Amino acid sequence: MEIHEKLYWEHLGLAGALAISVFVLLGLLLRLRDTKPPRMHIWAMIAFFTINICDGLSSFAYSDTFNGPPALYRWQDLIIPGFMVALYFYVRALTSAAPRLSRADLLHLVPFLAGFLCLAPTLILPGDVRLGLAPGNISDGHRTLINAGDTAFWIVWVIVLSVYGAICIRRLILHKRNIRDVFSDLEGKTLRWLDGLVATILIIALIVISDEIGQLLGQRPLRDGIWSLSFDVILSVSFGIFALRATPPLPEWTEAVLETAPESEEPTQQDKPLARYARSGLTEADMDRYAARLEKRMADGQLWRDHGLNLRGLASAISIPPIHLSEVLNTKIGLSFYDYVNQCRIRDACDLLIHSNDTILEISETVGFNAKSTFNTSFKKVTDQTPSQWRAIHKP
Image (cartoon, rainbow, N blue to C red; front, side, top):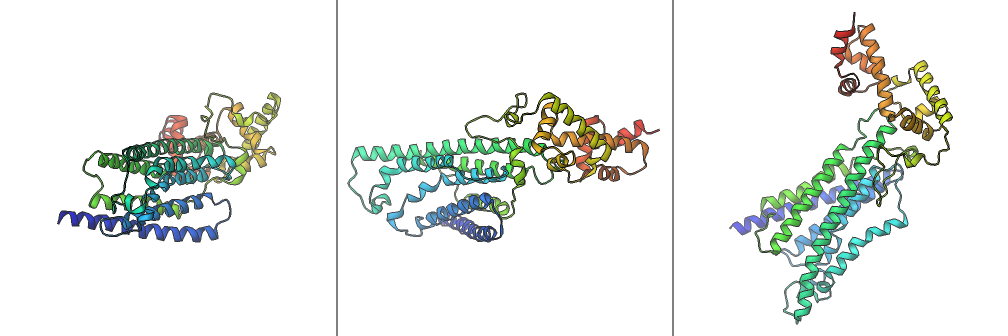
């Protein structure tokens, strides 16, 4: 009875995950039709859910209840690295201004080739032998290769998980620094939900790997019964919700301004010269002149009061290229665009708190903040006081 109950929950979980995946895949295909390029984030999710559907169908086909075609047994394992490869391209698309493929991306075929080499001793066997329907005449040497290949395959999967997980995390960290260089309002651009999504996928993948290794060592499976249902459904739901709604937050014009994240190098450190300005040609005198023009134009026009102010808009207002304004802010003034604009807003707010009777919410909106919580956080960071404390101390 217990075995039947476990199978019930496992099949229910697989069926639910498959239904969700098919629904999301259809939605992604509709989004693909209605979305203008670049669409790498949609293609990455189409690949992810296609792999998820194939993996789910394979689990159904070769379960204790169904009998799938023997010739295809174990071939579905070759697409398992695709989960992390698709996740990487999804993160890359959402953290890039103009994501595009290049010849260097052929390197991402390596996990699939490595998996094929590991499973080759198994895959060359007849399907009914692989499935255990026929005894087969397997030599001791060949059986040793099969066992070694299976172990090596899981080692490769752990390496793929670790490498691609680290790359995704690094890109997300760099993205949070990049958006501060081009936006004065970070609402909806930080991709915090993607941080949680990547963490969820990595945790689930690690548990699955541990479970598979434990079963090879003869231990009781972790993912059985209702736990199997939870794992299958959580993966599909967590990805599906955001796959259908996610939109890259970086406009194409930011490509020339932002720091890129080469996969073979560490991100540029804050205390090192920024490589993106190496060819700008600005002299010290140019930066002094631009900095003075920036300060005068900001003060005369109170440009920080524009809620949607971004780097390109401010650069246009003072008639210099965005890349030069970015260099002046980061190397001459020593602040990101976000911090510079917010400091201007806080100085303005300090004056209004003293010389007006407007509410704190009204003042936060006047100086350019879109949310009172953001205003309070920024104000305390700059002044080490809350707006209420500042007004109580300084207002006559």
